Length: 175
Ligand code: FES
Ligand code: FES
Image (cartoon, rainbow, N blue to C red):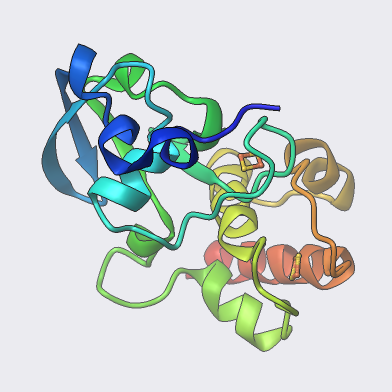
């Protein structure tokens, strides 16, 4: 199992002072210059450096999806994504998800309408994966949803999530 750098040797190690380099990211619309070891997982840059703690750590091995963010239009698992591979990339986290006018994304409205979250821990990752799916496919079937979103939810919110994604897709189609 991969142990997050921050748990190995504290916060200084998380940004890798010894081999640090500069990486430019556009995060939720803001240009950010990050000094970090290129191998530092994006998750720890987001959480520890940029204080965007909506993106969660679950497994650390790209299995559970709790750390999912969008890189461009693609959902990616930030716990195993070296920040050095992302220079110049556009990153969207749960804090940046919205309708583009300061309001909630159709998925966030549908999540509330369908009362999806239970404990809530996995939910930001699911929302980001669902946002990437709807950006690529406007009317996904349940099979499309299951094929595109392999995230894990220990509270078993899958049926409510599928219903919310379908509902958001309908809302987007008529907006
Ligand atoms: S924490 Fe990244 S996939 Fe589980
Ligand atoms: S809502 Fe609890 S793990 Fe998904």
